[in-house]
Amino acid sequence: QMQLVESGGGLVQTGGSLRLSCASSDATFSSHGIAWFRQAPGKERQFVAAITWSGVRSIYGDSVQGRFTISRDNDKGTIYLQMSSLKPEDTAVYYCGVDRSQFHTVTEWPGDYDFWGQGTQVTVSS
Image 1 (cartoon, one colour):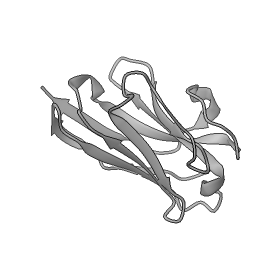
Image 2: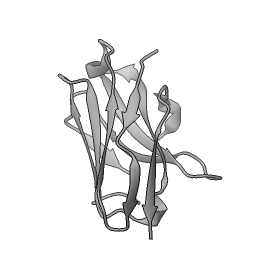
Image 3: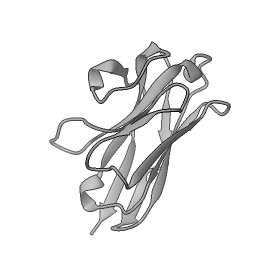
Image 4: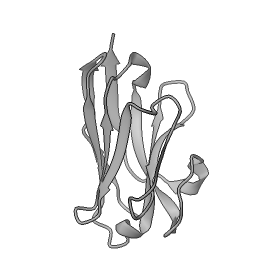
C-alpha cells in the first residue's frame, strides 16, 4: 500500500486561502492519479479534485470549480491543493487517495481510489 501524508489544513476565515499537500515516498507515486476528497461530520465523502499521473489532466467537483487548483510535483512526490475563496461549507477533513490503476485517467468515483492517509482538517469560519 502507498503511504500518503496529508498536511496544510487549519483554521481560516471566509474568503481566505490554504494550500494542502499530499506526500508520498513510494517509488510508483508518479504512475498513479491522485484525488482529493473531503468529508464533513455526518456527511458522505465528497469528491473535490483529481489529477492524472502525468499532471496533464485534472477534474474538479462542481462546488470547488474555479476556486481550487490541484497540481503535482512528481520529483517531490507531492500533490497540492490550492484552495481560495474558502467558504464555511468547505469545512471538512480532506483526504488524498491514490488511483488503484497506473497510467490511467481519473474519475470522481471514490471506489477507484485507495485512501491511506489520516486526512487534514480544514475549518472555515464565517
